[in-house]
Image 1 (cartoon, rainbow over the protein chains, first blue to last red):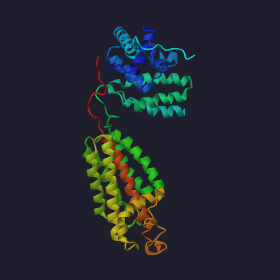
Image 2 (cartoon, each protein chain N blue to C red):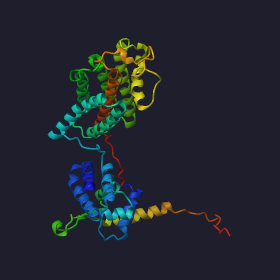
Image 3 (cartoon, chains in turn brown, purple):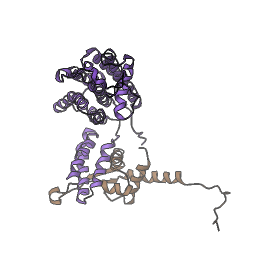
Image 4 (cartoon, one colour):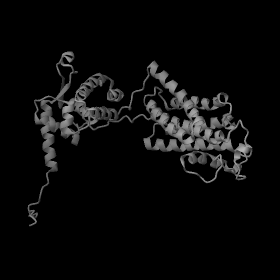
Length: 107
Length: 298
C-alpha cells in the first residue's frame, strides 16, 4: 500500500495508542482528514491487513444510538506503521555537512 | 430537521459510490457518526461530513463509474420520463420567458440532466444519443401543433433533422473521450448544429420579414448574445430595430408570426435543448478507464 501523507496521519493517530480502538469521527479529529478521504483510506488499510475493524457490541435501543465501528492497528499494521514513520523521518531529516557553518545568533 | 433532509440524499449518493458488497456496512457506520454529530447539534459538521463522502469516490481497486446504472423498472421509467419532459420544458421556457431567464433555467435543467446521465441505464453511446435526441427532435417538430402561433422556423423537418444529425454524430464521437476532449467537441458540435439550423431557417424568410438575407448567418449569435447583454450592433434579432428603416419591424409581420418567436423563441429553444442533451449524453457515456486508481505496493 502506498504511504501518502494521509496514510501517515492515520498511522500516527492509531500508533499513539495501538491497543485502543478508534472510530471514524475520532480519527477525523485526530488527523484533520475529511470523511471522504478517511473512510476509503481505512478500507484500503483493512484490505492491506494493516487495520482491523470491529463493530461495537451494543444494544442500540438501550443505548439510544447506533453501534459504531472501531478501528485498530493489527500486529502487521503496527510494524508497518513504525517502518513507515521511521522512513518518513529519515527522508525528511535535513543532513548538514560537517564543514557547513553553524548558525549563529544575529546579535 | 432541514439538516437531516439535506444530509439524507448526500449520504445516499455517497453509499451508491461504494462497491455493492460494502454499502450496508458503510451506511451503518456513517449513520452512527452522523447520529453523534446530531446529538452534539453540529449541523454544519454533519453537512461537511456527508458532502465530503458524496463528492469523493472510495477508489478501491479498478476505477468505478461515479454511480451505478439504475436498471430497475422505476429507474428506467424515471429516466424515460425525464428524457421526454426535459426538451418540452426547454421549449416551454423559451416561449414563455425572456431569453436570458430561459437560458439561466436551462443551465439548471442541464445540471439535472448531467446528474441523471450518471445513472443512465443505457449501455452504449449510440443508444444514449438516440434516446436523448429522438424525443428532443420530436418535441421541436410537434411544437407547432401544440402552439399555433409558432413561426415557420418550427415547421421545417429538414432543419430539425440536420440539427439532430450534426449533434448526434458529434456527441457520439465525443462520448467516451477524456473530459476535456469531450467538452470541446461537444461545445463545437452544439454551436455548429444550432448555428447552421437557425441560419437555414432564417435565410428564406428574411425577405418576408423585411430583413436582408445576408444577415442570416449572424442571426444565431445575435439572438443568443443580445439577451445576455452582448449586443452585436443593430442586428435583426433585436425586435425593436429594422434594417430597412428606423421604424419597428413588427409592421412587416403578420400577427400570427411574432418576430419575438422567430428571433428569440426558436434559437433559444434549440440552444436550451442542445445544452441539456450534451450534458446528459456526456455524463451518461463518460465511463472511466478500467485501470488501478492507486498503486498497491504492499
